[in-house]
Image (cartoon, rainbow, N blue to C red; front, top):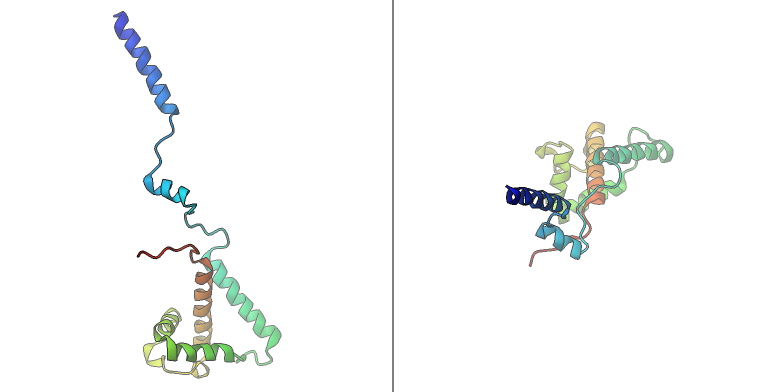
Length: 143
């Protein structure tokens, strides 16, 4: 009986010791710590609030810098769309997809879209800009 009491005491002590032991680190976490790789975290505003902020800035830019509020000068954006049309149509199609522009209108110049479509395209470009700002910076290419 005395022997079993001693075993119980030792078992209780062992359990307490195990409770104080730090758990093993997952191999992926150990590698990440050694390489100083951090998990992705957005330390700023949400994606939606970033897009809304860019859209508000675009509206403010129109009200301050453009006399024609209904059709402000967007030559830079029109030129960018033409550049994509010639060099990377997939990216242009992505922007049009985000803007919900019908595929039968993808051939139009920016100035040929109506006001709502232009607003949608600008909002889509702002979505891409907000996303680009949030992309991870330390990406390793598998080789």
